[in-house]
Image (cartoon, rainbow, N blue to C red; front, side, top):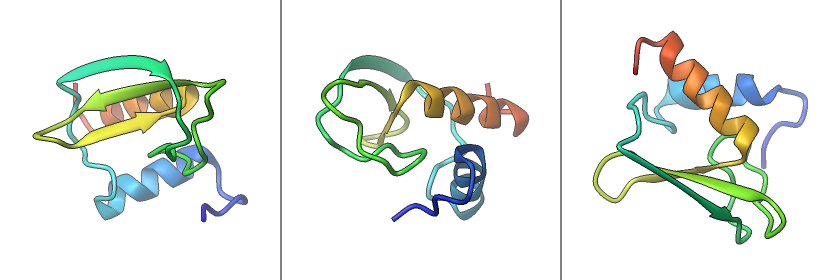
Length: 83
């Protein structure tokens, strides 16, 4: 369960630091409505009323995000020099 006291940016930075989110840019991206899977950024479910942004990283590794979480993740990748 995510720590609600930490910001989403803090959670994403922590996941990048521990390797739970890889510091690798996506190869492909697509979107669609969520189906309840947890967001890889904030940990909250991506509901059927939310748009889910999915990013193929390497192999079968796919990250799923809410739009705001995807933006923060991409900004953090750029901060780490990943384009």
